[in-house]
Length: 411
Image 1 (cartoon, rainbow, N blue to C red):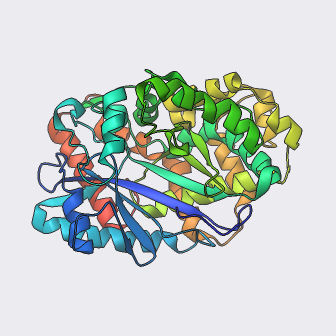
Image 2 (image 1 turned 135 degrees about the vertical axis):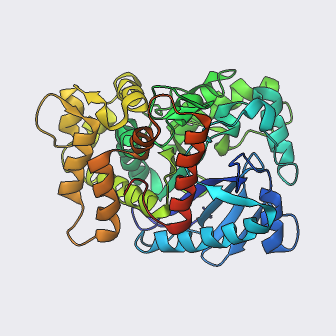
């Protein structure tokens, strides 16, 4: 998302959606993102503005990203904008024998054999990442996510937003998990993307940390305790300082002080933008209520250490909406009575309390998620416990059709 001109909490939003390019028949990954961007820009570029959105490259050639062209004032109506652009990309892919596939991981890609890194502009950055970390694993070459960018102004707003984001991160997979299959197998986890993401930079652990950010609540404290630590740790491997930028930070939410936003990275991409935007709307509503101290004070929110939040996150990565939360203090922070609940029950409660009546654009997709589970659970229902390669192609072919037609999977 481009820099905003000093807009405050919940006055603007940035959305980024990532998709796989695949062969239209076999559904194998298709490394032609540069050709798609060239078809629009007339030359090889890493990013091109297309009306309300930007299309851009990612680390690998089989992924393309669509993002808002700067902050937008409202999430309403945005799903249809993304859908129209996805149709345009599918039209450009057709003569190349390709199509777009949604979902956070390709279900049978072999990243060690099939990865093609972006070779054009930004390649020194990607080459440096590859030299240090080796970018041919699932955690680099096979993950598609949604990034939700939320602006703030000054330390006071940053403190409120960062405290709220840290508290909400652990239960995001309960809404958005869409990656239950890896290497052609059902793994037992609903969110394999996040499990791979947790370990993709273990060579320098401070870069990702423990995914949940440290409890720091001012720019000076953040730079000293997070950014300077990871800059120092990577310096011996990056003597030219190519990676010493804010985006090196790979926690589940990162502060981008260059544009005064917090970027949330823990949401798997869904089967169509209508689902992504509905999830984003509920996330925003929950964060707004937290920053307003509706159920817990700012001091109480800031008092959370990483360990108890991490425990809930790991349960949600494994079990999604069925993850058990038996931390009464955590439930109370969201105004949820009782000592025990599933993450799905907590989200349903938040939706009932926070979403105003009449917002069918968001309520419809959320009703499917609350009834049938996140996309990962619906995929598992369709696949069975040990799907054959043929069944995987059938189900993920249907997923591609959901994206092309702008409808939810399993409805």
